[in-house]
Length: 110
Image 1 (cartoon, rainbow, N blue to C red):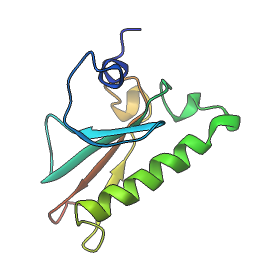
Image 2: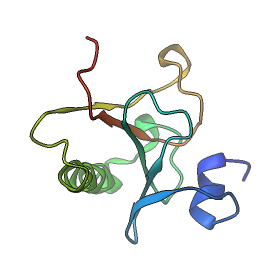
Image 3: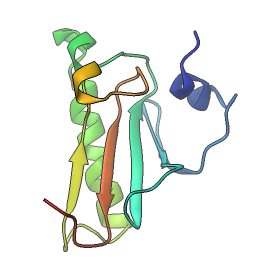
Image 4: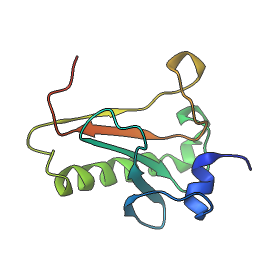
């Protein structure tokens, strides 16, 4: 598979890991838009939320648990943070592997 994020999961492409468990990987974005800008991905490949079967939707809950953990660890849980998931071409999804951007550490524009 020629997926950048799958290559990061396998270790073929390096990343700055922030969190990892058996299902989810989180790493710093290489082009941060905020002082804290972390990508959170499932280790299993799904192109977007549209491709996660109902029977596997627990991965989305796991991703959100990890986001809460990271927010506390990075101390943005009290001041606030933004979660972004781009889904498909019109949303400007660049990497075709479901991922969530977690941004914080400053006052974000609306």
